[in-house]
Image (cartoon, rainbow, N blue to C red; front, side, top):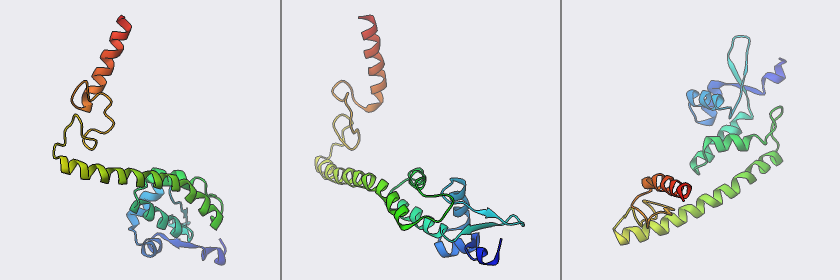
Length: 161
């Protein structure tokens, strides 16, 4: 590697220091294929400086509740053989917009339900949308844990009929 090419790469320690995450976290991200490195002749990791942006995006994603698997999926639209352009990053961010909108809506609904439930005070397994969300069998039994049994019984009854 030529000297000017070496300037494009940083050590794992420098990446950790500049990104504000630990070396262990960087190794974890690499294991999860969110970032990558090359190895020197001495088997030391060297990262493209562009990995700083990836690490920053990972940290921001975690703050807003995006799972690492979703980050990996979003990163899959970025080029692997060159530094991502501004347009590449914009294309990637479009993937998250609908996910974030959905999370915001869910949190707003949760906030509304929480006010209702605390006012109600019951936190009933039969009716509470927080304790037992989307329980389609609430009228037949108490609690979501009975759903599989009731569905199996329903199927058995249908076969016998």
